[in-house]
Image (cartoon, rainbow, N blue to C red):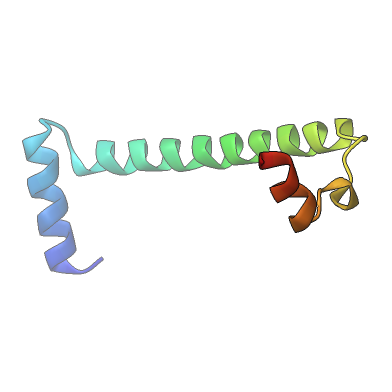
Length: 71
């Protein structure tokens, strides 16, 4: 690790009354949790998409029909 990066990490750790190791540990925990959350949301999205069966882009109104309905 670059000396300047480590120095700045030590300053940040001191500001938070913790250690650089604790900051790294928390970063890794957050990183792993974020990956799990991303995968959970992807699975949820896929499940929702599978439930949508009655949608068709061809069911949209044409531009003329859209403006006729607004009048």
